[in-house]
Length: 230
Image (cartoon, rainbow, N blue to C red; front, side):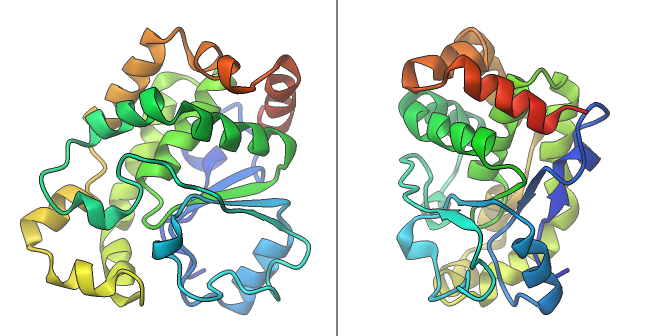
């Protein structure tokens, strides 16, 4: 299936998760009939990209006629991967999302709790997607090492992600001009980045404590556990 960096989180985040409930990927690109069939079985697509990252009709209505597409995703830090064209400290960026964009994070987790099966994606399916998925998994009690393993799986798909981003209308020019050492940092999924995020989550008392001030209630947690846990 051409959805890049695509996986069922149950396959990469260890035992105890129900398959076919939570998926993650990079942006849609060159969708096939098989992709359309997969999407038709979802209840939600959480599209974490900003408006400038989207190409016209990259989630065509024909593929999402019965699927909610959550867009309004104006997270601050590193919202557009092109803004990383410097010397990004991914761990610090992820922690900053938790500090500064907690309401955005809570909104996505709440939507997931109410709308499984779901697909979460941004442009590369690594940074914003990784933060949202890690938070949801932490909330339902998935082991820290399994959350890290799911995040690291992106490294297997790096070449495909790079090739796809260079061919997209909205982002191709920026990525094609970027020096190799910059692309290395942008496309890498280092263990220390996700551990920095999880450490900050622990400092806040865990996912539940971090998200409750932003609308998370017991019902959302119960729904997410019922939907994700085997």
